[in-house]
Amino acid sequence: MATIRVVGAAIVQNGKVLCAKRGAGKALAGAWEFPGGKIEPHETPQQALEREIQEELLCQVAIGQQVNTASYTYDFGTVELTVFICHLLSGEPRRTEHEEFRWVLPEDMPKLQWAPADHDAVTAIAAMHFEH
Image (cartoon, rainbow, N blue to C red; front, side):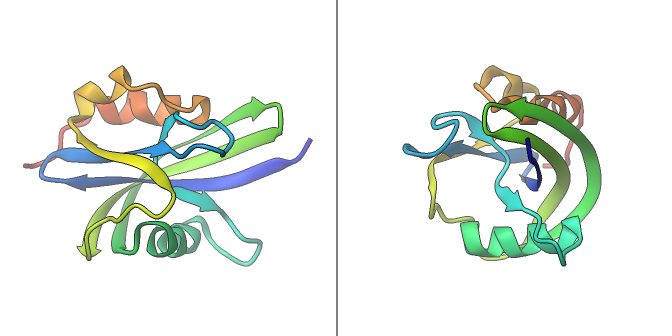
């Protein structure tokens, strides 16, 4: 089975993290995730994340520290997800493919039903403290 390399953005604003709910008709519909997407062969993870956030959320982010990289094997392949802490540079996140957005305090993030590949990053971020 193929390994799908993807990146996710934990966008932090006012001490909260942007959580995105996958839309209907997609794999893992209804699960929460960090916005992002596939890394193209010619891209670094950071370049892929900048492009994906511009395409998916119609805003720009500054990419900060890497939280982690985790793999999870689904029935369609293995997803290798690398999550970065990000901050908004310009624009406000807009929904183009997600069903819902929520700004959530880090310690409340584990209460949402996350996609399995995102669990390790959620656990790590839930223990972090961000300035309000």
